[in-house]
Amino acid sequence: MDLLMRMKGMDGEEEVELSEFESQVIDFFCDGVRLLGLPKSIGEIYGLLFVTQESLALDDIVERLGISKGSASQGLKSLRDLGAVKVSGESSVGRKVFYEPDVELKQLVGGFIKEQVMPHLGSGEKKLENLRKQVEEMPGNAKSDFYSGRIDRLGRWSKRARFVLPLLQKFLSK
Amino acid sequence: MDLLMRMKGMDGEEEVELSEFESQVIDFFCDGVRLLGLPKSIGEIYGLLFVTQESLALDDIVERLGISKGSASQGLKSLRDLGAVKVSGESSVGRKVFYEPDVELKQLVGGFIKEQVMPHLGSGEKKLENLRKQVEEMPGNAKSDFYSGRIDRLGRWSKRARFVLPLLQKFLSK
DNA sequence: TCCATTGTTCAATTGAAAATGAACAAATAT
DNA sequence: ATATTTGTTCATTTTCAATTGAACAATGGA
Image (cartoon, rainbow over all chains, first blue to last red):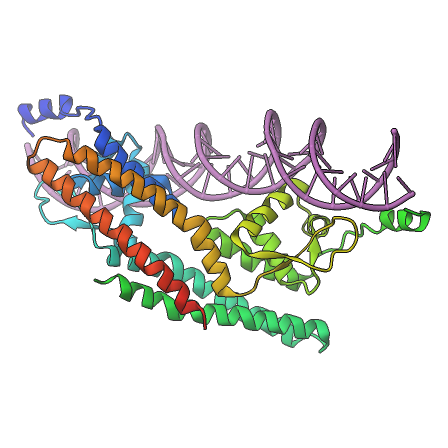
């Protein structure tokens, strides 16, 4: 790296304040992710990518949002897992990675369902199975009948969810 | 209130421990409400009602769950607002109110959509409208075109949500 | 090789939201 | 009237998850 680039590196870290418009769009996504029970930083990062025409690297995100590198790294990891951001091809400099948002609602919802909802549904069903066994081992009486009915109902809820979630995705396609 | 009843009141507050089965069902609902971004106490209260054949009053809930009266009161209010619990008729003693759970999935999901999702959707649309105005006041150039496209996209997301949510409820009915 | 750049991990800190508990209100019974 | 039961409110405390920041890889360039 030559002198010129080093100098650019030194004072090139302009604290590029977010415009009012950018801030408001980012806030919009912060609200959105809170509704989904995700950390605010994820909304900030996705919001910044959404409102920025150029793809951004981790350092850009850290500088523009004023968050820590750790937060940005973890947030980007979550967003990658969710399929909400993708790696842009135009890297070229070293191993630096640039990100851009996936802006297709269907993909976003699909990723959320797959990563956040399905795992919970699965572990819930395991717990249900365990509960059902406990009921079967109880002495048969009015109370165990009541419990059995409740567990049955939970089982039906679970089935409905597995039926409806893929449908939901389908209806978002077009 | 006579002496007998007073005495019953004194040692009638048996710390009725939750059975292992009851605890596990309650845990099940705690996990569930966390996924929806609601406080744990709401899951506990609904879970207790769900796993109890008799309808319960606020004091019963406080005693059996070992939570504060304030928590129970607020939790029950939320659950009433969500339409997840209803007041049982069989009160009779004073103004004491007994609760039982609504166990119809369709009702529960409907209440959640109406109380939690729709308000957010509405306030989001107001923000969007405001953002669109800001874009219209920008000097026309490549950047404002990009912004305009993004805001359009968010508008379409919102429309899709309003279309799909009622559909979701419908598919849970039977 | 060795230094600079880029990114991850994780223990410690912080902060936002939930729970507490005491004061208060409202209704009923005595 | 007065006391008791029942329930709500809200300022404080607690809790737990998100964030930080420093240490640690891993890669690439000089």
